[in-house]
Amino acid sequence: MPDDLTTSASLIDILRQSVGPEGITDDLATRSLFSQDIWSKGETAAFVVRPSSVEDLSRAAAACHRHRIALNPRGAGMSYTNGYTPDRAGVGIIDFSRLDRIIEINTRDMYVTAEAGVTWKQLHDALAPHGVRTPFWGPLSGLTSTLGGGLSQNNAFFGAGTYGPASDSVTCLAVVLADGTLVRTGTAGMRGAKPFWRHYGPDLTGLFLGDAGALGYKAEVTFRLIPAPEHEDWASFEFASGEACASAAADIARTGAACEVFAFDPQLTRVRMKRASLLSDVRALGNVIMGQGSLLKGLVEGAKVAAAGRTFLDDAAWSLHVTVEGRSKAGVAEDIQRLRSICAAHAGQETENSIPKIIRSNPFGPLNNMLGPTGERWVPVHGIVAMSQGARALAEIEDYFATLRPRLEAGGVETGYLLTTLSTNGFLIEPVFLWPEEIFPIHEASVDADLLRKMNRFAANPEVTALVKEARQGVIDIFSRQGAAHFQIGRAYPYAAQCSPETLCLLQAIKAAVDPDGLVNPGALGLE
Image: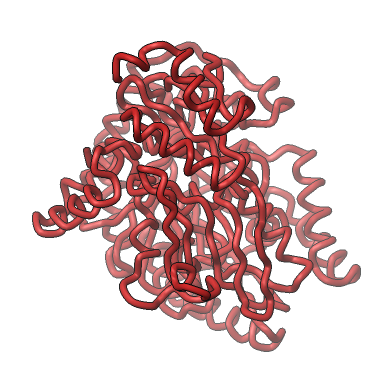
């Protein structure tokens, strides 16, 4: 850091002039909280800047650029790959939580523009009264996850089975570059044009999507809109093996008929069922009843869920869940029947559809799953492979875990899997780990306080955490051999190392053009 900026006071004075007294803090507790993610802690940030407008953001970036201070962008803090955690001293954090305005909902031109700190739930709730939604409409963490964070990392889940990940629904961006310059992409970057279209000339919008926040600071996002589906239905199936489950999921994904396709292994199902509380069940049941369009249908569906309870899944089975939506009840029913036939061809047995029904009725629940059911630490790792590679990649990871099993069991480490699909050509495998370890302030800030009070508090457990780190790296190595892609690249996945020399050279040239001093989230994407 330059000599004239070595004291906290000088940093604060400079940025206070840019964003006002409410937009900057050097409080140690805040700096520590914002310097960690779900997986690990980084170097403690020098300050946290909280712009409340795009102009604030531009001024803060410009001020830091003039004094060669690096800035890391942070959305809701849901990274588990050191996506924004400082890897060196003297770095500032941009907190986007005050950039939370929905700027325009345009149902004639079918787009919505919002600031980057808007949450996925906030956006979805704002669109619902207009009878529209974005094609991809949020991750499971959408209660707090932000649009900007999601597009830096990319997202899977709601709507992704049909429409692909979050970035595929974006038309235009407003991005603040390292020196404070505001750039607009797509037709938003054309004189006199609305932000309705992405593809005019080179796709500059795509340049800043999935970039781990390394190329610029997303300030505003425009998504295309679609009419909200009028009908939906759900189905769940059990399989005797992961291979059969993964093969069925891939065949379903190839049809494009299911807007969500996801599966759990037996262990992750047990963990989720153990986590469920009577209170959450009652709330979920109420939302199922209220979300069916009519009281009669709601009572019928609610009664099915209540009757099934938590005993409808075989303890030894892999479970696969699908949601289908459409314009007509007949069309949805036809698609559901088609998916039943696919699962039957893989020896799948249909079971009660409570899980997809409840998730659809409670899409953005509390973030309590970032800890295990009795307070264990939780961390995932994931890869996206071609559809034909899903079952094979899953089997290789299972074989790897088998070699580690004695050590994992000795350390009290549990593993599980979430599988999901992305449109017709992406198969996502997400192994998860739960183990006894102390929690971080970010968990304290994110998990329901009532639930936290009932959980165990584990002591620091560095040896077992090192084992989890080893196992995660082993999974990443398997994915690398499979030629997998990743969301949440951050500083965990070997993006730069996997690039061909020609591709990496082009990326480095782009980084040099938009951030010549390397001040935007340095180290992310493996770039310096």
